[in-house]
Image (cartoon, rainbow, N blue to C red; front, side, top):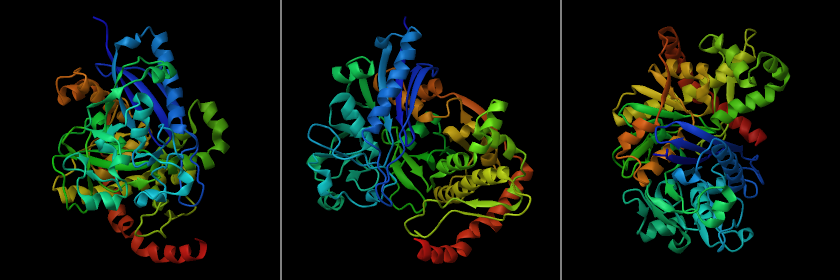
Length: 482
């Protein structure tokens, strides 16, 4: 019997990736294409240039299908594809399905308010998400997953369908006729059209399967279903989440989102906006001077920094970073802070302090979420490119004082896509079977007691008091420079 395959389509803030798996979770091949730099047409606006989401996907598909065919793969043996596209974007489409304006990214201030039509948009027929848009490009269907509508959308998280409450519809300012139909994760959205198939090199008629928003799909693909197990997703936005059973209505320290498993929920606390962006910013800003050194040692600039920072003691000998590059709405004056400099500090201290700052910020949010849930944190899975760093993994284990692991494939959203796709076409008998076959656990990191004790003191005696002391200063600074 010929092997069968599943395809995961994962589009994030920085890149598009298409991965082909066999039914035992082995990666057969993958294609990846970086997205272009975000366009900032005015302060606090952020748009994807041109038709960049679709253009990058076409390149990723071309790469993966070329490799698949070169390795002797038969496209007719691909059973289905799951599609996971960056969450919290707003996409405006014309009647013919083309973009009425560039895709509005989640960092854009327009996403903080209900949809408002602008004359510059022209004729807008549909208001949808990035996943709805890509689904339409693949299938010509006006359908989307119900689990990617976060923010100003009239979505009923109890029924997993559009709200029937007139006040909710009015508040969101999008008439029902401008919205796509929605289905639950694991249901088929449509089939790949002949036009899209010819363009992408995939079979016409291939089922396109709904997933959820990107963090929820990562959580499924990381296998974090047990109580007390959390996923930390290291992306441009660093998020942390645990699975739950109920749509908690009065939560104070987390949001209950629809999970990538129908009728389950994902509890997500506040995260770090531009979290891994900050690490990339540091490497881009300070890395060029050591490019030759890294090349001579046969490593990337990031790995060279990781090696240097591994020799720096926990706590960076007093250098502390607070990640407020993207301030919250209730404190728009906040800015990133790095303090405690003295003559001992090197570029390695700065780099490690950035990593510790991400871990501390996530701890401050996750502690509150787990306390409200009444569930002690017992284990963490780290996903995303940052999980490749042994140093970063150990910092998380030490700061949180729990065993921390990464999967063999750190980009677990693609795995989650394949699980949803396989469930839709009957490749797996249950979600548990799908996870046991598709999710491959990787390295585990145990807390180092001495580091954990020091981090605990640094967190409670210094880090938790930073905003009380710096907010008045930064508010005054903001009045001068903003």
